[in-house]
Image 1 (tube, rainbow, N blue to C red):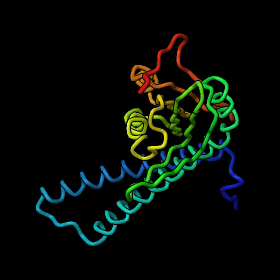
Image 2: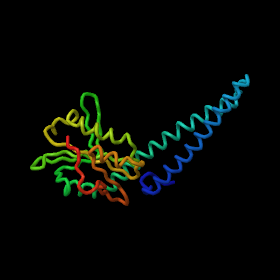
Image 3: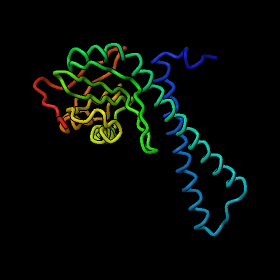
Image 4: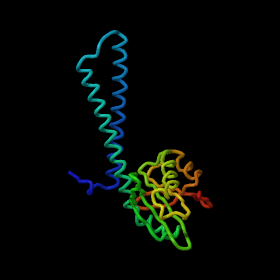
Length: 210
């Protein structure tokens, strides 16, 4: 059996797609079960023990599949982040003039913990921090998540106070319209494909600077 270390990027994406399809089928079964329960109750009949067991088992399957899909999604994000890190670091240093690039930057302050997928900063002529959020699939809520990370940065890392702040939202797959919404919110956008990290913001893009 393959271990996590043996899995390729395509292997992980295929597993997520398969689990998503299983989850869709299980969800369909749950809807059918709900309909059957309603029909039985409306007709004055009680669900028997076999049906109750079926309901419990289906519910367990849904919970387990959601857990697996979520876990693999996180692994894919970390996998992509790690593979693309060399090109990401090169771009952060050359394009944004960052002196320090720290992947998986984790801080804890006042019993609150925050992890940044990639945190980069410079202390010289360019006095700026770049917060990078990496997603396997970029959904709309990732925009607010990244903005919150940027806005609360000094609360978690006060030693960076006084620096300008910008955000980069990166991902493998993007929901329709999310990339454009992120850019409209003033965030740089980037894709990760074939171990490469590349900005997708249009020419002349003006980022929001906090």
